[in-house]
Image (cartoon, rainbow, N blue to C red; front, top):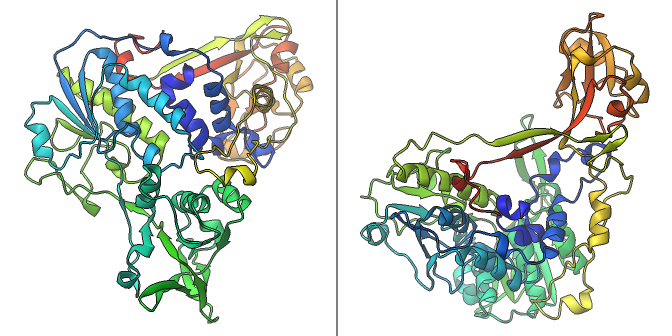
Length: 555
């Protein structure tokens, strides 16, 4: 429930998240790979048991306000989840026959099983959301004319970019746009491709397209990227999964022409380039002079990016649009220049990912609630924070302070012989509870803070003696650069602040280098005066239903 309260879709994100949190994991400072935070969320979701009784139970007392949610993706669903317990009448519109938006149309079932998505979407819809599925909204005016008190637009970035090279028109139906291809397969409008498939693009959509092709008839599937491998936008693990399925990836080869023979697509002609970077890191692709490369293909899938599409929003409604025909929004409130219209997810600032859409939804829900309560949308509720001692005895803590030295555990995968036969068979099997526990043991307990109380310290230096990483130093104070150089182990990571105490009786200060602290608690165990304590820190972004102290969303 902790997962669900914040992330809304723990089972979905535990399988598909872009993992923006993992680069911040301190385990990555001592080893090549951080803790598998994303996949551990899946372990929690897959082993949750019965949880619906812990969620808000409608019907909720109506407050008389009505809100339209345009688009059934993660942003709109998050707004619905946060506002439903407050009594708002919520109407969700989507052109497809089920909720989920891009999670349903652009993430293949072999990565995200339909039953997992259905379950987590239905948790929200079952709160009393009025659904208008199979309804394509083609006019904002028609929505505003229905007397909604507020409108949230979460329509994503639904327009794939074409690549109109010579031969594009002649190739006809042999050329597909990536996100449209994935949607057609998801809804079983397309069930096969030719034996030879080329996917153009180096992002996650390209990886999904090539792997999908492999499951619906593609035997020789090739991904061709114009940039070097290190510049590919696809997540490293998505690239790894594609190559595990024997999909070839060629880099530094920009397409030049769709080759047509006898009125039919024959393949694609590619040039060869190398990447050069200037002093600012700006990249240029320079032709190498090598001969062009021809690759045969029956089908070509273009996955080179997505754009927003707001042709359905009339330009006389007070909603201002700016660069790239994107709505002009306040980045804090997500409110447009028409005060009753809000945007979120990819529809707000362009293509991102599911967890970003969820974050937008939480903040937009707060804004909508404030707006409809007649308050300023900038009166943002502060986050919830606390700091609680974990001490139970002289050598006992309420957290597991042991540090495991295992490297990151690999997530088990289904064998290709089984996985490639059915596009609905999930490839990643996930950690079982035991493997998940072992992976969790790699955590360095960053949520448990070492808290130092100066007036209790007798400067015996026992903590210095016991520290296994020599991260504590008692020394004369000074400027930061000088101080960093005088620690027991010089603190060279300038991105990590030092923990410096006030002046102690001997005119020294205690300095701790957080960069190498294991949060093991040995300093607190050894300290004879309890000057050190281990305190768990919790930070939680306040949701709309919590801004007045309510806990309506979770029991």
